[in-house]
Amino acid sequence: MQLQQLRYFAALAEVRHFTRAAETLHVAQPSLSQQIRALERELGAALFHRARGNITLTDAGEALLPLARRILADTETAHREVQEVAQLRRGRVRLGAPPSLCASLVPDVLRAYHARFPGIELLIDEGGSQDLVRTLAAGGLDLALIITPLGVGAPALTTTELLHEELVVVTSPSVPPPTRRARLRVEELRGLPMVMFRRGYDLREMTIAACRAAGFEPSFTVEGGEMDAVLGFVRAGLGLAVVPGMVAARSGLRVTPFADGRMRRTVAVAHRKDAPPPRAARELRAVLMEHLAGEGRRSGECS
Image (cartoon, rainbow, N blue to C red; front, side, top):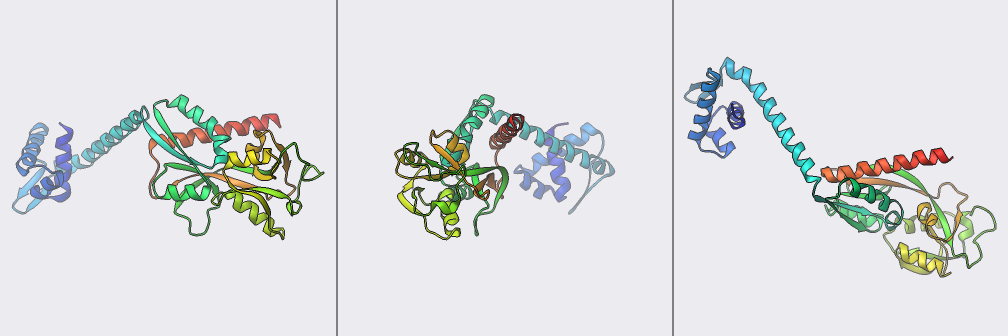
């Protein structure tokens, strides 16, 4: 008994017409008939009642059909699983992430992933969260680390929350601190020189919104930079910046936390809702979750 014969049998049982079954299978009708007869000879039983314009299953055919469908389904599953395993020896994953995460979380995750799947090429698209959402929705990325919640009218994405990160103020050690207290209130940013990210950064929108909610417009000395540029401008004493805590911890700058616990952001991993990510991308997401779970355990042990 051959898989091809079972495939022909299942197709004929579905449409109950030799010519239409042959067209569905893209084979010649005589070839289909020969394979069905060969299967019947091997099984020692007729599988179809053949009458002009009326093809029906015999009792033997009725008994074989669910078994044939199960065998064909299991074969397809086996083929798919083996192919996916083979694909993890080579291939690529396209990951989008904001610069703040590329400078903190992403390198450690990619190192762990590359050690596990060295044959997978890693393509990184670094950009603002809003830009990444558009690129992901257009099919230019497999996964993206984005800031939630998504804005009104955002594309249909499936998101999984990863972490909540505190936002802090960074200043150069060479200039006076923004406050004499251990924590800073948003209102105290009024009139202070600020270095601001370019448009499209979630940090820009969050900072401006927080200042406006406190009743003032922020004052920019430099505007339009990427993360590395913003940190460099702050280091040069051009102003302060609001950045994620993970970035601040590695910056070498003075760090002042906010008194208001609302100055925080939620990081999520996202993919298109209508297109599940490929196996290599799913494995990257798993490594990401494992890494964050490990970080959480270590933080709990240290607390």
